[in-house]
Length: 247
Image 1 (cartoon, rainbow, N blue to C red):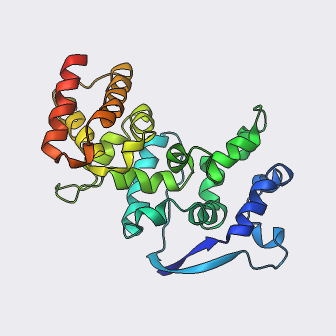
Image 2 (cartoon, rainbow, N blue to C red):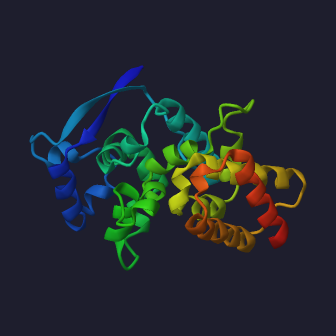
């Protein structure tokens, strides 16, 4: 079934944000509530983007496994999004509050946030965009799935999602790799994941501390080298040499 992709409009987005605290009970609701909240006012608009209806797997025990399966679903359906469209908070806020509300309730239940010091910040992080835009893209409950696919999907491989599986094999890999400004360049992220895939096959997969050191190295390298000008082979060689030093 083909559906049109909707966005929440800008004024409604801001109204939702400033009312998170007063809407805490609504975030515990099993049903979508935005129509009631906006009282009949127009709060969304339809884009010209048409996609296949997406039925996400509901998370149970292994969230990484479900993240992988759902990444394939989201990215396959929304592969045509441009980077500009994929950084639009209005799109992802609409999807977290409507289309994928049942998934969000299961994956990010608000009840688990209420005992924390700042439940509003946590809701903003998962249902909206947090202030740090680079981190926001992979903290939003649905946007993160698209970006996992964007930085790892490789159509030249027999299994285009082979590197996605590497990315999501450990939570720390996804967070450390994607919470960097260079992560929007899929050539860099795929070069890192390709080398990690090779190391995994060699039974010498690097640990958490070493991986973070590798990310810091690439981040620093971006300040003295124009990474965007390097081809995939050069990027992989840089990563490989650094891993050999760290291992």
